[in-house]
Length: 347
Image 1 (spheres, rainbow, N blue to C red):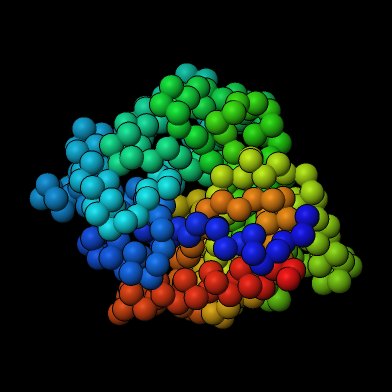
Image 2: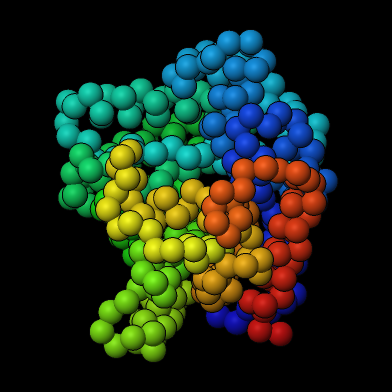
């Protein structure tokens, strides 16, 4: 499908609250910077809600103190409304699917799910982002993963809530877009769709932070790698129904200063997960991923929904944790969004 420039003018813009400042940055300052740059919505990051609640109630609020978090969530919803921002999605709901039956992990997952649904009601959002599990304890059967997500969809359905399922490129069982698409098809519920992501797609199928080149190195070299990636994107653009894409998250990636250790770290986080946490700038600002190609493939499905900036920018070395001017960074992100749309358009 052609991507006309005129068709892109209605695409709504979103910014993840975890992608600006730090968890200690007052949430009202984050919202002010995001709204001031012209974004229309936010992905509300759970760490920001937890931080807001702890500051608001002058105590450390537990991640499963859902009564307090709902009270705080109602305040956050009001703040967003006053700032002219829609709460597009609550994120990131992690390590939900794949736990063995009757395990403590599974019981905790469903306890969290019911609590997060209450938070969604409180803040006024209808979409929950679920990242594909990176737990080493998850059962690998796609049918099992789909069964868990089907149950979550059924918990969300009475509230008219939706589940946006995202492939995390360091996930243990569903690291690329084809995996999550297959699982979504198996779930077979009207309220599940895809959260696609330029970093997760290009960072999983084309780039590799553990190599000197920053690319997946295999027989055939870069020419074959590029060909295979373009084929994957062509399939994406031609086969995913536009209504099954709920949101597209946008970020680029810096090539690590030196290759990352391929082994998981002390917390069990794989290399691509560590790369994701601090080396993801806005597009056109020092990264090297084919972000335009991914975004164009998504647009070729006919999707014209939320484009959301979800970046984790620690600078080229990943160590810059200072946020000297959030407003200026948010405006840079908006300019990046506009340029991205210009470069994806056919005419």
